[in-house]
Amino acid sequence: MDYKKLRDMVSHRVTFEYDSGAKVVGTVGACMPPSGAVQMLVLGKVQVLDATGGLIAKYDELPIVPNNLIGFQVTEGPL
Image (cartoon, rainbow, N blue to C red; front, side, top):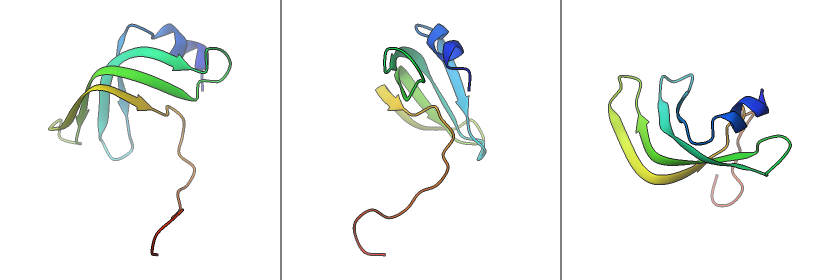
């Protein structure tokens, strides 16, 4: 991933698209950590859209991880 490109997007409205067709649209407010590989972005004025463009949710601020998900598992609770 081109982390410099993500850092250059601070203060820009961007769209993140997912394989399901869902989209997260928001203004990049910050990249974390301050240098090196971007592990998290903080977006402002966020809209989460479904595959048809329908609004699922709105947030004033939403932290996201802009990296590829490689897996998930139950950490606590019943299986």
